Image (cartoon, rainbow, N blue to C red; front, side):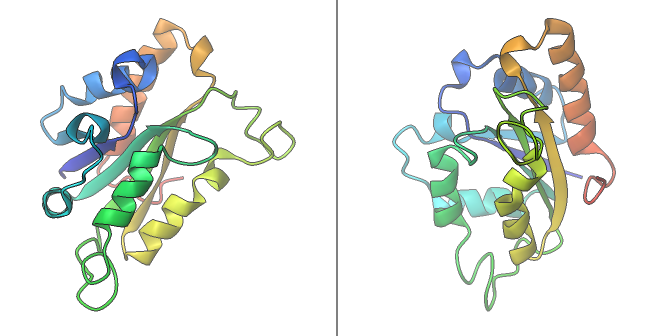
Length: 179
């Protein structure tokens, strides 16, 4: 199974977590890493190129740091530009049907803060519901999110463990619907 990781970090060079995840992913032949902010510093998205990348892969993972309970702005812009009527949905819009799609995200908040009684009031699974809705809308299969919280306090050992767990999560025989 070929996996495409669409990384959306506005300053990947300064990111300890997302950068480490990408460095680990790049060691695997069946994983393609596509960093939106590096490819599109001017934010002029090449829709045809992006659609070809999607067609060439069986599994798509959106990797990003959580921004105000959502994705970074360029990823939202990417959704709007690439997931077009007649291509991703609607008549003739079947190019993503049957693919596996999910998200991998990092947060500054602790795991405990992303609970119904925590300071953020919602679980991370609830916060990424728009991604899950998108997946179902285009006829794909949902891969539950991979998350790492409290990133400012992650030790080197915890980061190394998360790299292994992340690769295992997104390259499993069938990652869809496993949580």
